[in-house]
Length: 126
Image (tube, rainbow, N blue to C red; front, side):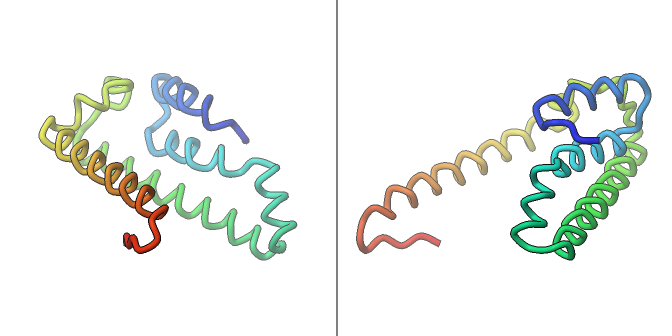
């Protein structure tokens, strides 16, 4: 079933609240937007049917694998998915949130500096 990325998140949250396991919701979030008819048509026309089969197979394998991993994490940590929908920020420790924010800020700043330097003749970024 195709669902656009914007609407799939609230649908997945509602499905979890109705009792769907979080792994299945993640599969829905990953595979739904990636399997639209336009993308599949373009992949088939630019490449070939074999590439389309590989594309769809990898989406299915990765989505199912990640879904199983999420279910395992929820089970291992004994988290009730219905109780924590919309509260993901409270599950992750504050220190980890802070470190992640600093890393993200550094990466954004590095990218901005590299973009500015590309305009100069002798600039070099990784």
